[in-house]
Amino acid sequence: DTAAVVGVAAIVLRQLQDKSFSRHHLQRLWMLLHLTQWLLLSAVSAAYQAGVPAVMGAADSGYGEALACTKNALETASELLRHADTCISQVNVECPAELRVAFFALRGYLLEKSGQVAASVEEYLHALTVLDEAWGDPRKRGCRGHPFALLLTWKLGLVAYCRADARAIDKFADYFRSLMLHFAG
Image 1 (cartoon, rainbow, N blue to C red):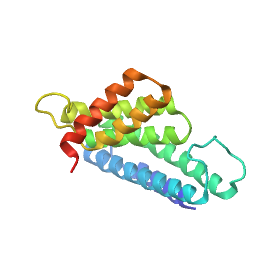
Image 2 (cartoon, rainbow, N blue to C red; image 1 turned 120 degrees about the horizontal axis):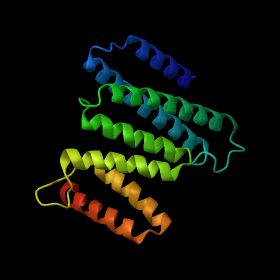
Image 3 (cartoon, rainbow, N blue to C red; image 1 turned 60 degrees about the vertical axis):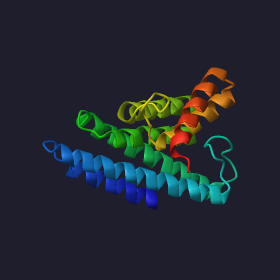
């Protein structure tokens, strides 16, 4: 079972860390985030191929093994992100923006797939805030933003559209358009 292998890898990574070397924490964080990303992508793509609903809890019956495997992968990914959160708290000052953005985006995606859309929006907003702090708001003069913000603003815009929140729709659409001006093509 893939989730069991990932869980064992996380335990080994936890035992190998050395508190006196922050680079070890950063390397461990990077490995945990990549492992979580791989686990989520492989589990979700396998679930889509099996016809499991996009959000867990939407329709839990009739999918058998594919649903159980996906739920197990989501639980393992959640545990990996808890370990990653510990790493971030240990090297908070030195943690690169890219790793913090990846952490918040993966946690948001995990919450989204678990059916907790309101909590996922908060995580996506955290990721977008970190991107703004590091690369600037593309709506301001002289700032380009970051291409990953395209995904975040698109997701946040979709949620705002589903909630019929006109103010948020305008905000994220404006942000998205500003990014598209620079990164399209």
